[in-house]
Image 1 (tube, rainbow, N blue to C red):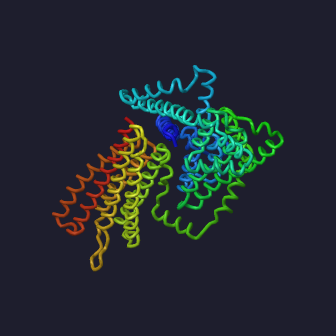
Image 2 (image 1 turned 30 degrees about the horizontal axis):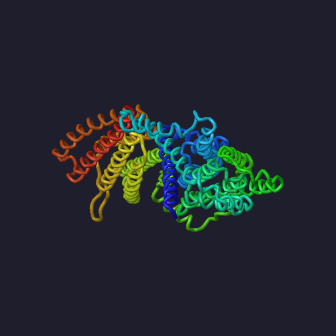
Image 3 (image 1 turned 90 degrees about the horizontal axis):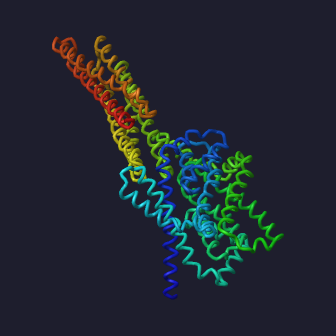
Length: 559
């Protein structure tokens, strides 16, 4: 191997690296600039399958990877946030949305015809503008746009590097013979496409490489490009299949739907193209351009969606036959219900927007469980029940487990590519989880204070004391409920109401503490019961403080 061969190999590796990194940076930048729009896309997702297809296409156009979108779908289904019927539509749309990268790559060929439109001409300028924006711009939004420019510029520079490095080899007989073989043997062509895509974990990247080779020398035949593209669709399923391992049955079924959908498409269109190429052999053996590959790629994906759209429910049923239910699935479901964690799935980390949104939902869910435990603890003060005490203790263990797992998830999110606003939100969620967990501790303290230990007399309060503490408990429960609603809906009115409740609780706590100390001094109640009353009052006041903290985070975000 000569020094030139080594240099060309390094150029190809470097070009491929810049191409992939450029796609990654551009995708991250677009996701950041999209902000809450991606969350809005999920909110409008209904049982209307056509809407689901459009959403899947839009998401994949942003993320630029059908595999990543499908992995997120696996996560949504596993978290119970999406049904399999909805997932089918999103998966179909994802296959269409991934074509955007092919058209971006085709700009290089269009630029060779119209020099003024050549991406190679503007790529260095894009990188320069992006670098200046990232280094010197004060606005975070301008820095995000800078990252998009750098990503797009690197993508085109990488394509040029790959094209230049292989240009001298594409005229070799062995290369031409290889692509003729791929074109004449559909199974071999599809296998190569699937293998390369499985290794690169991106059909967009593998098809982009084929487009680069096609635009460099014209050595890629139409039939070879067709079969390699069909194989790339199958290879893109590997990412979702690997992601579904260890997930619930429905998550595995969503990955199976993605595989079934692409395999059926490859069989139907591969067979049709094979027959057509044999009837018109000159068409299959002629060279195909980069734009031609984009046209076929987009046409194939769209036609496959139109073909299988009416049979979406059959795909769901077939996935149920392919992925059979096992006893371990029941055990897994029970475990998940015990932990009560519904929305945390690391597959969703593929999209920072959705990951943040799901973390909020789980923090709210933790708050709802804690609010219910607080109500149960307060009921014990009025009507003692030994079984209810144990329930409060058990739920507190669940709350502690939730705090641990949500915190770990938030750490993972904080290391993603987030906007400054999202980083601030994640920081507030860290604090919120801690405050909610402390509310759970105080609810457990209240239960412990009234818990009747063996050999001890039950804690009892006078009617006046019960009436007084009942009023405070009502205010505290309302304050915490308002705080959780404010977190869920970013409702400023609820957040402001928490502050009013907290002031009332502080006033009542001070007033009742003085009155009860006076009752103790007059020996109107037992000292043991009196101390328990004051401790309960203190725990209730602390809970209102934590509710005030939760509301404060929401108000700060709004401001």
